Image (cartoon, one colour):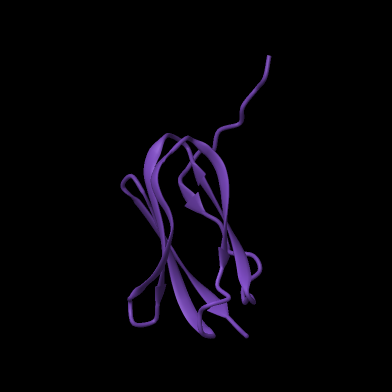
Length: 94
């Protein structure tokens, strides 16, 4: 018998490392299956890249953002999962 530990809440963990150059890892958890969108925006609110878009199973997940083609500066990553929205600030330093 295998026990699977399921997350209790929707969450977007702190990016690591942050500040970063050129890549950072984003961990997130889903307590149930959901449509998930994880998008990075610049300071002007323009979409830079869509990291995740689609249906995902419950559980713990991790995504890597390689920003080697982006300029140094502040970015925001927004995760939308079902009715849940989480946003955090990222700092790219080259």
